[in-house]
Each structure stands twice: as structure tokens, then as C-alpha cells.
Image 1 (cartoon, one colour):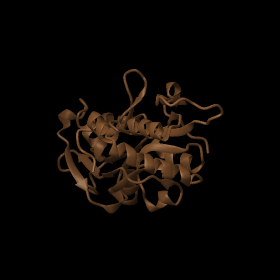
Image 2 (cartoon, one colour):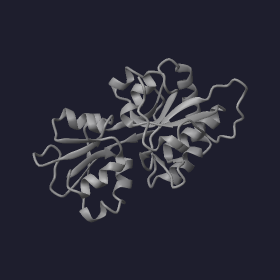
Image 3 (tube, one colour):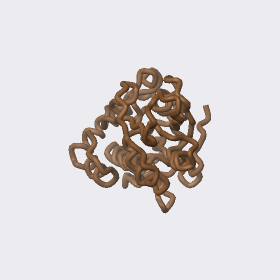
Length: 249
């Protein structure tokens, strides 16, 4: 398959990570998929460069593995397909390790536990006939909402959600916990008085991992070892403090 590249990818395509690791002659850089519109986990900063918690973790992992890595922006809906097809060595994207995904790609060890948030106007309950919910294509939240038969508006990026809510196209969104913290600070969202509900369905919560090319279990093991090291030496916690207003569990 050919991956659809995000709208801001031109300046980010094959962007080398500044890890301080000298490239060896003939060494192939690891290809890493990232998102560009999923703050605070992954986004494009004011200078046009990738930033966010997951981007920082990817840099730290590559530094620890002493490899050169290159980032490419993709849409969330394309991540699993692209990694499964070998277009990327791994993705620095927070994914629930669902059975369907595990059948297609390898997963790193979990690096935090995530819940899903129903963020809606007062009185709009999940599954109500009046609920019009938006979710991002390729997400566990989107699959769940569709499976429930809800009235779902599909978007490609989290950045599309504020306009849909403020314009009244939808009256609820179903999103990961970290995304909800950023969304509630958006100027279009603040006047709406939206209410937050944690949905407890098992399909919507669990351990979050990076996905890895299924043909490369050795790389998965190296990534796991690198995760262990950056947690031991404090780099993971420093990134947590820099990008997130809560402690990851």
C-alpha cells in the first residue's frame, strides 16, 4: 500500500532525528511514523518541526539504540497498514494493542495506560438518539462508535474537532484521555460548557504501545530494552513533565 501523507508532511517527510548519534557508512535509518495533529502526544510546533511526548520518546529510544531515525507524518488511519506493509520500522503513535492489531503488527511493551473520554454538551449521553459524535478514523474510539451504531462523523485529525463542535455539526466527541486535556483548552471549546465522561468499555481502555514491523522481532526487543533504560535514567519522566499535565501510569 502507499501511505497517505498528512497535509503538513512536506517539511517533515524523512526528517532526521537529532540524536547526536553519528551515522555509519551504509547504515539505513529507521523509518518512524508519527502524527502531526494529536497534541500533546504528537504535533507540529510553531517552527514547523515535530514535537510532543511521543516524538520526544521516539528520539530518546533512537538515541538509546544508537541508531539514526527519520520521521514521516501519516494519518492515524494509515498507521497499522503502513507498519504491517513494512513501509515503516515502527510507529511513535499511541495504539491500544487490540487483538485485531496484534494479528497484523508487533507491539512494544506498554508505556502507559489510556482511557477514552466522551466529551459532550450537557445532557448528550453516549448512544442517545440525539447524539452526533465525531471520532478520528483509525482510532479505537472510531471503531467502537461505529460498532455501536452511533451517528458518527469521521475526521482524519484531532485538529478538526473544535470547529465541528463549535459549529454544531456534532455535539460530542470520543477521544483518548490525553487529547481531551488539550481539546478543552481550545478557545472554540471553552464557551461550550462540555462535560467529560470516562467510558469504561474494555475496547476503549488499556495499555498503549508503539507498533513495530512484524518482520522484525529483534527491533521490537531493542525498543523494549530502550524503553526500560529511558525509564530507569529519568528521560521518560522528564518528557512526561515537559509535555503532559498528569503522570503516566
